[in-house]
Amino acid sequence: MSSKRLLTTLAINGIEHELALEPRRTLLDALRHDLQLTGTKKVCDMGDCGACTVLVDGRAMYACLLLAVDCTDRQITTIEGLAQADELDPLQQAFIEADAFQCGFCTAGQIMSLKGLLNETPAPNDDQILRAVTGNLCRCGAYRNILKAGRLAADQVAHPEEARHADSTH
Ligand code: FES
Ligand code: FES
Image (cartoon, rainbow, N blue to C red; front, side, top):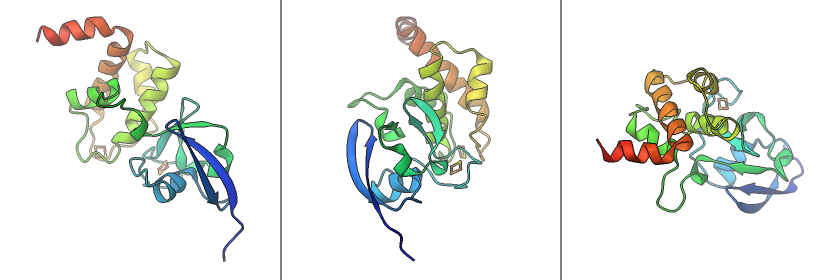
């Protein structure tokens, strides 16, 4: 049974997209199926795992629990929107440096949750980093290095000059 579609404008990674969507379409399905932004992962589809985490107006949220039609007039950022030209976001770079993934399936969600934390708390302590990813399951058990990556990125964002100096002395 098909239902009426609504013309919906979604601002994703700074670009506006006009889509005709069923009111029941989740933001996650709109991203993955209508816009082919498949970096945001679909796992549980019911708010249990965090794989679908994106930023909505800078705050980390589960895309599987949001209706796309409710996201008009919001700024949505996905993992595809973090890197600037050839330069990775400090969090993406930190995940590489800390070897913070195995299969990588949870990684986009982990990074987006930490990005939300750094937007709200630019100099988080270790406990705040841990709490930021408590809603993101990692089946590979890469938690130790995920937390290390969060710490590295937070230090880089808070003290970019010191981090660069430390790099050059290694
Ligand atoms: S797919 Fe959204 S929380 Fe698991
Ligand atoms: S790296 Fe495999 S689920 Fe986290």
